[in-house]
Image (cartoon, rainbow, N blue to C red):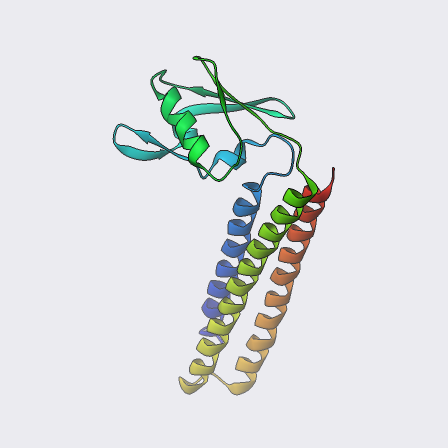
Amino acid sequence: MTDIQPILKKAEDKMESAIRFLDENLARIRAGKANPKILDGIKVAYYGDMTALTNVASVNTPDAKTLLITPWEKPLLKDIEKAIINSDLGIMPENNGEVIRIGIPPLTEERRRTLAKQAKQESENAKISIRNSRRDAIEALKKSTKDGVPEDAEKDAEEKMQKTHDKYIKKVDDIYAAKEKEIMTV
């Protein structure tokens, strides 16, 4: 039975990391209010390297509809502005020479639907990852019977893996439902 536990643990760890990845990706999808996480994917040219925006500037939310970006070095203002314009945010930054302001416009109904579809796709990707973890674990369990693990222990472990799989799929559905509600709320 000791050979089975590491297989189950490894699969559950992979499923947990799929949930964390989903959380990070959904946090980047803006839902009508200012959230510094929407800037996480933006990279800025900094001394020849592409660096995360949050590593070269501080990002604050003075109110629910505004992001305020204060670079740690003034010459970076233009590079940060260019990176935001070139990103897929779809928002024009305002540069006053000291800081960059990003006004988060209210979402249109069409844009809300698009963002909901994007969130649905992210949740489907997480589900695929969870299913792949289950499949890999079950294959490893079947191989373990050839290495001397009793068949009934292998079947019990498969049942346990299925229950773990179902638990994580439900988590994905719950996370998606919450994000969809946040996106569609005007």
